[in-house]
Each structure stands twice: as structure tokens, then as C-alpha cells.
Image 1 (cartoon, rainbow, N blue to C red):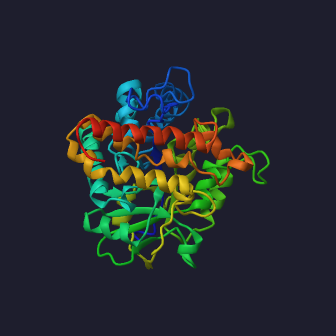
Image 2 (cartoon, helix red, strand yellow):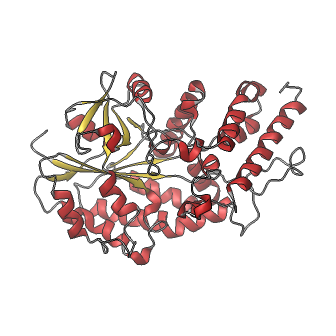
Image 3 (tube, rainbow, N blue to C red):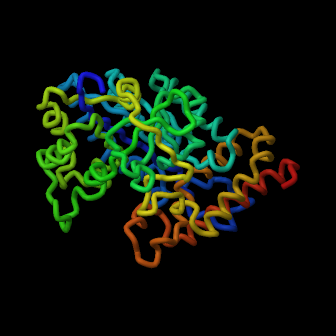
Amino acid sequence: MSDKKRAIVLYLHVHQPFRIRHYTIFDAGLRHDYFDAPGGSRENNADIVRKVAEKSYIPTNERLLRMLNDHPEFKLSMSITGTVLDQFEQYAPEVLDSFRKVIATGRVEIVAETYHHSLAFFYDREEFENQVRMHREKIQQLFGVTPTAFRNTELSYNNDLAYWADQAGYKAILCEGWDAVMGWRSPNFAYKPAYTENIKVLTKNYKLSDDIAFRFSNRSWEEFPLTTDKFMDWANAAWDQPLLNLFMDYETFGEHQWADSGIFDFLEHLPTAWLRTPEHTFMTVSEAADTFEAVDVLDCPQTITWADTERDLTAWLGNKMQQGAISSLYSLRDQILGSGDLALIEDWRKLQTSDHFYYMCTKWFNDGDVHAYFSPYSTPYDANMCFMNAYHDLKFRLAEKGIDV
């Protein structure tokens, strides 16, 4: 540790997919507008981005800017996917401006990831690296910064990914502090990923993170209501551990937890409450990796994520529908990239976004699980049908160019 400092590492993830509209088999071969649903429908991307902007992005950025101005010690990290940046540019430029103001303070780190929020690492390493490069260039273009820390889609992580990130020169990589991987270890330290030389891994304190992200407005939760003072008591219980890694979706604030729950006040009071103790501070992901020595090696041969009780990839790849859809899409890689058609390539990449496969998940469907909240489709089977119709249209477009599929 350095000077016995204790740091909160607040990391927020910003993402919206290009949702596939109700794209029927009768559209395939005639229309190629997979993502452009009519205004007012559950699938309309422009409407969704503007709604979430009003409820979450704009008010959250206003508060973060105040927090940064009021507290010189306050810092945070965020990741912003290429797909949501494209939608900000197209549908809500004022949101992009609000992010620029926050990042321009110099105390907000942008974490690298895939441009299209894809699972490409597990299917096509070259495509994965292309999307990471595309994302880095987009971040440099829009915000004038270059990422030095990495997170993969849905916080998916394993030894191979950490090795890749180490070889790519990143200082830090993020993963879920899942009990099955952590064992006796606490998520409140920095670790060295197995088989790496220089990179550190920061692990999410999922219990305290999820108290905010998932349980904050749950009136049946035995700890409801969650006040800042109560949260500080929990955070200070690990007084001898240097890090508190709070990782969550940006949309936690105002969208997943509505404004009337008090979530914005909770966020804005966090720096004041934490910084009452002189040893306390805030750090970005990269700063924490630079500051704290790894206390042990973290070995993770299996793939973990930050989703569900299983913390694996089954939310996206757990059934035959999902597996068939994603395998079919990546099987077109050589023909799509070889076509040289930039619009076709971009549509193929938008279809890689992990949300499309998440909407096909049947784990919770029969129980009417809350996860259905995130889907614009009536059933997982509707999601699969729309996706596969778009996939067949990709093949049609290739055939039109004389490319054998």
C-alpha cells in the first residue's frame, strides 16, 4: 500500500445496442434496415436513447460534474461503447457534450473495450482486436484521451484475456470478484493475473456494488433504505484493505434505480461521506493499478462475467438458439470482410453486440423474470427470429455481390 490510503474505484459502464426491429422474413432480400424501427415502438433506438438520456445520462453527468468541481479528490472511471457513442452522435448530441464536459476535467478515465460490445474474443481474435482498435480511435477522436485499462464485454474474463491485455500493454484489467475465483481472497486488493508480467487485475466488490445497482430501491430488502451513512459503515468494515471497487452500469442512476428512489442524492453525497476520513481518497482504475502492489496471483482458467447467479456466459450462450445464432454470424466473417462493403461490414458488427443474444435467453422466460425488462421483444423466440432474418439478409447481400456463401 501507499501511505495507507484507502481508495474507492468507481467504474461506470455506458452502453446501448442498436436493437433489431421487428424484421420479418418478408423484409429479408428487400430491405436492409434491420435497426430502424418506427418511432414510438419498443424497438426504436432513437426513442430509447433519448428516454434514457433524459432519465439517466444527463442528470447523472450533471451531478458528476458538480462532484468533480466540489471535491478535488473525486475521480472515476467509465467505459462507453462505440454503439452508444454512435447513437449519441445521431440522436442526442447534447448527451455527448455532457460526457465531454465530465471527461474534460481530467479526473475521469475512459476504459478500453470492444467497439460493438461483442463477444468476439471467444470467437474471432482478429475481429476482437479490430474492434478494440476501433474503440480506442473513437475515444481519441471524441475525447482526446487514450485508454490504459481494459474491460471486456459484460466483464467477461479469463486467464487468456488477461494475458492478451498484458501483451497489449494495458496497466489494468477488470473482472468480477466472484467467490468461486477469489476463494479466500478479498476483492479489496490488487492482484496479478496468472501468466502475466506487468498488468494488475481489479476485482469488483459485487456485494457492495450490487447493493447500489440492484437492491437500492427494493422495499422488501431487509437493509432498505440504503443511506450513505449505512453504506459507509459497510465500506469501513474492511478498514485494513486498500480498495473498494464499485463497478456498475451507468444506467443504475435514473434508469434502473429511478430518481424518486433517492439514487441521485446517494451518489452526490458519496464523496462527502467517504472523504470525511483523512486516509480516504478516490482513484481511477489505472491509478489504483499504479499505486497498489499485487498481493497475490489470481488464476481464472474458466470464463466468468458479472451476470446472473452463475457468473458465466450462459445468459448469452446458454441455449441452442443463442449458440446457433452467434456461430452462424461469425461463420460469415471472411465473406463479409472480403466484400469491402463498409455498410455491410458495419451491419455485421452491429449484429455481434451481445444484447441480441441476451434477448434470446430462456433461463428466466418461463418465470417472467425481471430480465425481460431489458428486452424489446415479447419472447426470446421473437428475438431469435428477427436476428436470423437479418442474418439471412446478410447472406442475400453477399450473394448479390457474387460472393459464395
